[in-house]
Length: 438
Image (cartoon, rainbow, N blue to C red; front, side):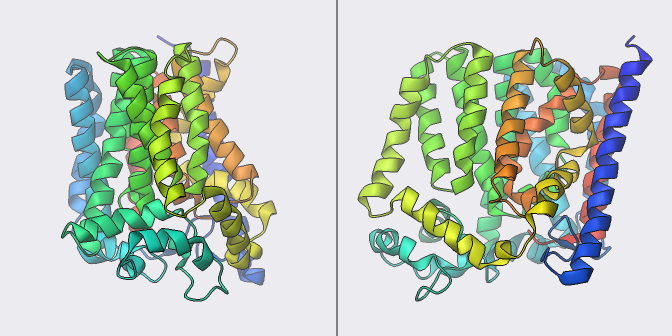
């Protein structure tokens, strides 16, 4: 049995995180009421206070109880493939049920059709080559026919995803929402594959229920960032398989990883920081052998976009100017540099916070899992300090938050049911008390 002091420290860490979030709420509301500079109705989250229930309420409650009570025992009996598939299925059910708390239309189908979102611009793309060539010229707010906020704020890969979906006959917010739901849910399976490759099957089994009952699911199924999370997760998973030689053809896995890493760069500028997570994987596996294949795999998307007329760096520099033309120009860095981190408390949950405490205690002789967690935390910290993530980080940082969730595997197994209950309680409280913007 583990000494009580360690368990008390876990509780202290979770309590401190809860206090941090409460302080961010209190200070944020005061600042917003005083001068309105936070530009959020319910800081530090992009949400408003609106207690409600919906069709997903009962399924979400039932699923939370079932996973908390039986998830750890089931995970211990599953083989590698079944564990990954069950994690995907469980995550899909959890994300979907939480989204349906707001109803199908408000929770899924209409999310990507608002004036800020990608689907508003899908009909404008008649010629993809022409769109890419003029894309950067339409980013600034004073540009003729400027893009909506989310289209302007991302490279064109995000918009093209929904253009291709529309051209495949799957048009409208419903199909776009389903794409985000399914891809986001697959991230849990990708994380299980990664943890198994780096830290072993037993650790992956301990992590799996926490990846399923992630509080981040509140946002993963209702925004394009859930889709980004899934793509980035599989890039990391394929890299882990290549680095540990967990597949028959490691070079092919590395090539696929590079292709996905290259694609993520054209989904979101901030996802260049996924390279930090990738480096953590290589350090944990103690090899750089997949790197040439990864770089080769990244060439096709970079080459395709560049030859079509979109230069990534020019787009990023222009987007930086647009960023400060909007709300970021008045949002105070002094609040968001710590308020962003407070928002992650309800994204990763108290169990992950307690697990991260244990990971920090093991940094002197870090295990592969601790190195993976450190890479994700470092990527998030760089994003925070950059000043390019003022608010909405519960959504924007989903690709990084995913890799903090396995920290809960470091907690004593006998307490997993209670920690899973705490994870579910955070998600259910946020989803039923607040109406989130994404």
